[in-house]
Amino acid sequence: MSREDELKYTTEHEWIEAADSVATVGITSYAAGKLGDVVYVDLPAVGTVVEAGRVIGEIESTKSVGELYAPVSGTITEVNDAVVDSPELVNSDPLGEGWLVKVEYVELPSLLELAEYTAFTAES
Amino acid sequence: MTDAPIEPPAGAAAASMPEDATPNGGAPEDAAPRFSPLHDRHVALGATFTDFAGWQMPVRYSSDLAEHHAVRAAAGLFDLSHMGEILVVGVQAANALDYALSGRMSALADRQAKYTLMLDDDGGIVDDLIVYRNGPDRYLVVANASNREAVAEALRVRAEDFDAVVEDESDDIGLIAIQGPKSLEILAELEGLDLHASAPEAASPGEALEALNYYRSIPGEYLGRRILVARTGYTGEDGFELYTSPEALPALWDALLETGAGSGLVPAGLASRDTLRLEAGMPLYGHELSAAIQPGQAGLGRTVTMDKPSDFVGRGALEAEAVIALEHGRADDYRVLVGIEATGRRAARAGYPIHATASGDDVVGEVTSGALSPTLGHPIAMAFVSPGWSAPGTPLFLDVRGTRIPATIVALPFYQRKAQ
Image (cartoon, rainbow over all chains, first blue to last red):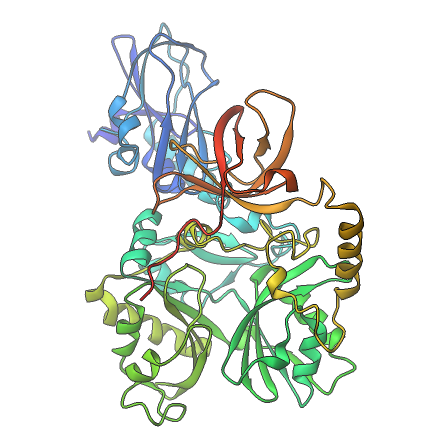
């Protein structure tokens, strides 16, 4: 399976990789492509308690601003400092080096499979 | 991610594409989208598209930052098929335009171009235009896509008492622009461009192009079709705008990309066009300019020839305004256009409020365009502020989604190319 197949997705265009109660979160290639060149990323501090569906950060491109939503409730355990210093990682490797935060969670909400997410972006 | 900025067709367009904010811009929602004669080329080049006043136009091909930098360092090729081209022809064409527009079009020499405004009776801005004089009785008026119909109709009405005919030729004239320091050398190498009839003294098209001054144009032929080559643009760089028939556009586009590939020419989308014009301090209709703004507020007083021998639409209102200002001083709501710079990387966007202090309830202005400047590396914005806050060096605060960021008024433009 490719990495894309292994990830889960939200309708807010985030991807989630969940393992051992920690979810790594980023934005999808589709979202990165729509935003254009990302020039600024604002992420929550480690230790912040986040609630699924709430805004936790911002991703700005030259031309637009996107809000980052928490896809799952929990506590921020790590943020990607590399992406804060080099926001272009969101465009060059959105599913890898361009990851944004890690969230320690108790329970995952219902998330989309790749096929469902692909169908969702095709509709919109 | 929010839906707003990334959902098509808003797509990167939501916060991005100026037209979305154009008050009277855009086609009706149910109107069929219009496609450029170059649409197939854009698709093949992998462009992302946006709705631009009813047209599906390329926002970017790959990276809007790379396209921006290419125009500053080498050259970019822009499809501007959506722009409106209106011909005004007749023995009184010059007089008709003197009456219809803010500048003195009768004073233009043959083959000279001028940036000018169309005003309404209240002195508000209907559109900003480039007018080319192509002969004693012949003018080409280039309007913004969103204002094409309004400008053509107003020109018709205003030309009624003159011996002049107004023809909206937008569907029969295509436009592409090559912009950037390498534009001249690329265009000079373009095979099939013939400028001999207009410049018989020039040994080559390149020599004719080199002799062409800024805001001048030269007619010629490209592969047997008529073309108008103008040294104009909207990026703050040297460059040319090429008007020809829509049928000739694809061959011209392909040939330019091929000729310029070795010089660093890339196709450039509307996203880079917007950041380029912003750095160059050039206003965009629907953002800096509207019917609610008078030329003096936008720093465009120089485009209004108040001492024209003939009357022109908007003059009475501007004169009355000047008398009131003389007697009472400028009202606080006579906001004026300024440049603003900040540090860091967070850009203020169109519509964001500007405050006098870090926490007070003291709005003194509003941002009309803003971006993290790709060339300068820090946030820049154009904004309207109350007259008392407009002097360069004045400190104030940009409200970026609830966070107040310290900023400073600066003189426009933010970026100016080095003299050749």
